[in-house]
Length: 322
Ligand SMILES: NC(=O)c1ccc[n+]([C@@H]2O[C@H](COP(=O)([O-])OP(=O)(O)OC[C@H]3O[C@@H](n4cnc5c(N)ncnc54)[C@H](OP(=O)(O)O)[C@@H]3O)[C@@H](O)[C@H]2O)c1
Image (cartoon, rainbow, N blue to C red; front, side):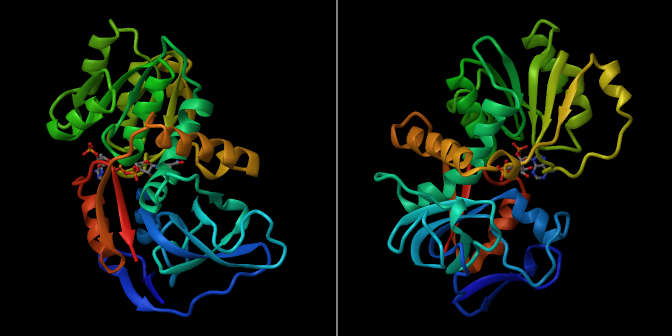
């Protein structure tokens, strides 16, 4: 089979298209023939070595496909099942083995591209809006990179829960995409000061929660527009890692809370995984949640996908098709 392999950490050019044997499922695992693999910013972090994985490795943390075989003791899925998963590395490939307990069977009406586009960013948006800071009518939130893969889904779920949503985006075109997804107000943070704008929108009161996936360029400023005892949910670092800081700043800015959550710790049990994935896939099937698949690439063009993602060229989901 063909796979993408990172042989040493580095730029997109380190995503090599090579041959490898089809893996066999060990006890508790399933062999999945991949139909579509999602591209996520976390794949960049692994490629550059910010998140730990020793080369050589196959990147990719999300895919959809068909179960071809199962290892001993697997009860969750069977050969022939249409499935999808997130947060197991190795999806930039034609086949992969995945712990069966991480696989979700796809409802009828959800095609493979939709499933691969929905799992990781959809469940992330789900835990941020339903668990990290469970939004309710009247709450106000700021979503950075609101036209991005995760951002657009957070915007939609926040609106489903009745919150007022302010968003940021790098260009007017992206701002329009986030507005279409439901954002109440958009700020083009490459030319507007998002602190001043959010203060204006909230009469100086600030928001209840900031969902920040941008990190270095937005984090500290974001603390200035959170209401007393509100929450900074820092869940990514597309612009670079937030440098170490003195925690007493949280006191000075109004007894703020800070969390740095991950999807893996919000799908710890099979029940939790099926709850989040079930909500996301059912909302998509019923038209309540709208995905935006921005671009699809052949598996061999993974490097181009990474260049586009890191280059801020995309708005929505990127998929690799083996
Ligand atoms: N913790 C978790 O559980 C979890 C799960 C999923 C994703 N994430 C995080 O969420 C973030 C978004 O992931 P995604 O896959 O949905 O990507 P994405 O938002 O579609 O793409 C990243 C976006 O970040 C914005 N950005 C701002 N400054 C940037 C810079 N210097 N370089 C590159 N991009 C910049 C860009 O939007 P603008 O041009 O509009 O600024 C860009 O399009 C990532 O940080 C990722 O790690 C975290």
